[in-house]
Amino acid sequence: MDFANLAAQLNAGVILPEGIVVITLLLVLIIDLIAGKKSAQTISYVAIGGLLAAIVALYFQWDAANPIAFFGEFNGDTLSVAFRGIIALSTVSTILMSIRYVQQSGTSLAEFIGILLTATLGGMFLSGATELVTIFISLETLSISSYLMTGYMKRDPRSNEAALKYLLIGAASSAVFLYGVSLLYGLSGGQTQLSAIAQGVAELESGQSLGLLIALVFAIAGIAFKISAVPFHQWTPDVYEGSPT
Image (cartoon, rainbow, N blue to C red; front, side):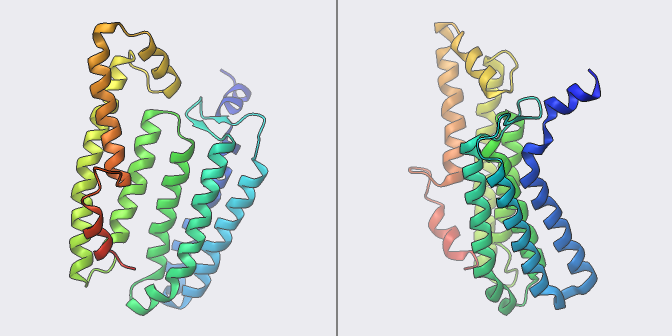
């Protein structure tokens, strides 16, 4: 495979908005290392500016002619663009509402924004992922960042308790989800692409329907725990009550 064909199949321009967020994250960390707490206002401006630039990049990707990237592992279609834009806008709103609270708490604003941008990256990649490994890594990036933000107020016992509960429930749900997708991987004949899994599952014999049902139950239950869907929402009140708000 020559370089031109490789570049065409990678189609890395599809993840330009995520690349902008990565650069913004690095700038936030570098500015904090150089200027320290005096750079709090600058850091917030840089983060918001980077996210707005990512939203502009998403706007120009709307209804793109070739939205498939990285050998089919990422799909930047209009639905993906819409969800990625919503996530970026939500992050901008969160930063604007959190600046004064984080500064009054005496914790580092740069670290908070860094964790928040990492969660944003996880959510944006998850919105376009079409492959099991990419889905799992994106989901865990989002989840781990959420655990850190839940326990961000280290001196608050309620925040620590909420973070521990969230971590334990999140780890259990990740294990359940991973078990379900590993069963799907085996039943589909070793495929990780969602389209290939759907095709492989459609060709299963009737005697394997029980295994498929178990795989789907585990995968859906793992996701349901993550998003606090009924009846897997019992952990939500304690975690929300103890989280920094």
